[in-house]
Length: 464
Image (cartoon, rainbow, N blue to C red; front, side, top):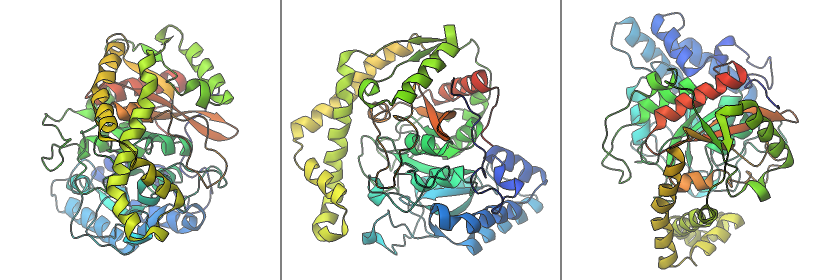
């Protein structure tokens, strides 16, 4: 089987600001800062040194203020030294995709139309991270308005290959050792795909788990926020810190906060049973190397995994997801295109025009079918703990003009289910992700199953 260890931060450009501290996971860093073994200032300084050495090559950052980052780190160290209570991410640097508003840094949304735009407040997610003690290191590159037109970011594993998108800077920053964790968003495949292409862990939580207040809206029925990191434990920790009911977001649902880290790090009460489902994109979109690798993976899992298929109706899910996304892109970004048509990419202009052709009947049908399809998927989860499926058609494609296809992500985003990608495979020196999908609002169990799979296949529990 095409197994590989998950790539270490610093594999690309070893020696360029290559402090051992940049290899720490967020969980490890939080524990070592809390114990006094290292300071937040030491960790943030190591990250900034790495960024200084690598940013010209990788291009992961939209905005970085080293002085402000160090001020936050020193304040965190003073608070700990004074015996003040500290949060679960105290002193840990976190990167924020540049579609989340931040009071201390510009939010430009990957478009010249918002150049220099300076909000007066933080997005809800950023507030939650600050409350947990995180140091907001800076803003990472997004594609134009978080759609498909690429930014400047390159894939750290091979600079001639795409890092994916739209959360391109977040994935590359984690993969290249700039920061232990970064936050992205997904409307089709913008967390899972770049995480897979860059060889890091990525998590798209259940729709509505993390508030989108203060985030550039693309499609209200689809937009979801989540982390990219170096371990499953990090995904659980950071998601736990971000998850909170927010009445300002209509998709946010009242609930008690499940202890994601404790559940994710526990042993499953019984050995998980997995279903391999190639999804409707399998036959036409999966590359030969992907089909071979997943065939070997399923064989390796043996009795723990059954190959099965979804009913034919699910093949319509990709089209319904696209209907929602395009119509909402036309609604939300059309006014910008009308105001400054020469400053919107040809690709986005084409999508806006296509979205304007969506009828109200088609849009409402696509909305209704989200729950209809999920009802069918829920029957799969009555027998299986999670679905195993590719995170992308193959490894990151060559070239920087495209961010790759979201065909293996869009169906799961459409149904609002949690999904996680694990950097378990490789081809031609590039990482390939294994995606696990679970039932709605059972994020902790999905992460626990993912941790079990990671250990079953590799015997390792983290990517750094």
